[in-house]
Length: 228
Image (cartoon, rainbow, N blue to C red; front, top):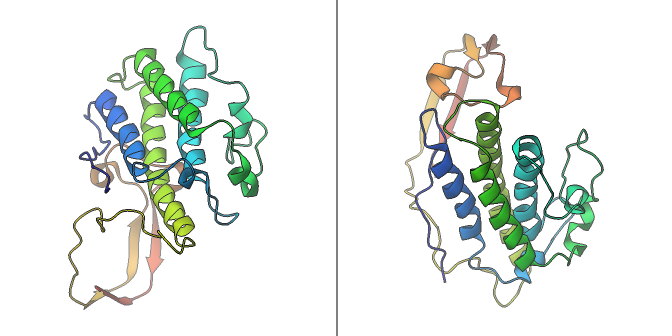
């Protein structure tokens, strides 16, 4: 069965951050609807992660960076998750080896989904997400982080299922969104000095730190082809 897809909300200035939070978090779980618990355990090579690990790591982000700082009387869902589902955040503490994530059979997928549900409720209760303070900024960062992982999750599970000789398909309905081939054509760019990096007027109110500061760079004359 193909996953039913809610309209994915874009996190932009003026958005209802609480609704964005619920919708982006729900979209991640929509992506695992075609999968079994066994599918969610697969790690097909050291450079990918099991779907179950993605689900937990994304929840770890909100628990670690939002709830620990803003929830009165914070108590972790499971203290062991702090190491188990850290990825590369060296300042937070120790990490479980990435190549061995597929060996983590416990906690179960059911417990990971319960972890997500509890943290969701606690984040929404932690403060007014409509306020453009530090809490809202961290939640916005977490949602962009989650949307990146949605692409990774789908890529990783498709790679894992490609090794299954009987049922390699992720979903019967593919592609999941409408794709219209574009005609081949050439594009040219005259080159010269141009502004490069985040611009709030063009890009909205959110940027990762490696997109700033905006600066001028020289680009050589380019010609490239697009289309299928």
